[in-house]
Image (tube, rainbow, N blue to C red; front, side, top):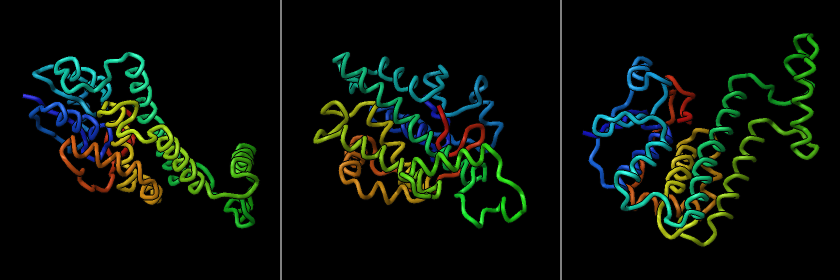
Amino acid sequence: MITLYGPLQAPFTEKVRRALIYKGYAFELVEPEGPEDYKRWSPKTGMLPVLDLHGESIPDSTDILLRLDRERPDPPLLATDPTVAAQQRQLEEWADESFLFYYLKYRRLVDGVEHPRPTRNDPEAQAGRQPSHSSSLRRLGAWLRAGGTWERPQTGVLREVGLRMDDLVNLLGARPFFYAQQLSMADLAVYSMLHTMRIGAIPGAESLLAQRASLIALMGRVEERTGGEAPMLSPGPAQGETPPLSPS
């Protein structure tokens, strides 16, 4: 019996789900219904996904994929060439962390931790308070990063997400998959993060993705080999992790 525990809308769960399908495993996906499920299924960290592989509990999406590759090497999730395999591992880690970084940055802005932009209508000024020194420095930094023009922080996040998508476009080039002619764990990680952008984790990122045909084509190739198009769910909170791009 193989059971994958994790919220379906989380990219790390999606990465493992597609790896299981690609490897030809029969498995059950069980989603958490509350915070207690996270601690029960993942007592050490309280984070999902976790895979129950024939009674062995395996946390962390990367470790799960590596474990699957050892148990069922064909089809492989890493190239046989160690140099190419190292590149695939690096890209998988980058994809996991890079888009998570921008999602968390976006959430901090939405939750009011950072100020949207410095204007004469600044809420701090309207309230008769002087902006804090650190607040002023953040605004100055945003102004400089925007090339000397004021830019809404949310717009800045989208601009940076678009640049990271361009990095992927350039890295992929004319190849069907990253660093190889067949799917690897790098492609699964990139797909899962892009899919989360496509369902609206950061509003506006779905439009940026739609403008990059090679990434859309890559996602289609991944889907062809891993069970078809993913459910178009709206990303929602995942207890025990930062929703929906939960670091695992």
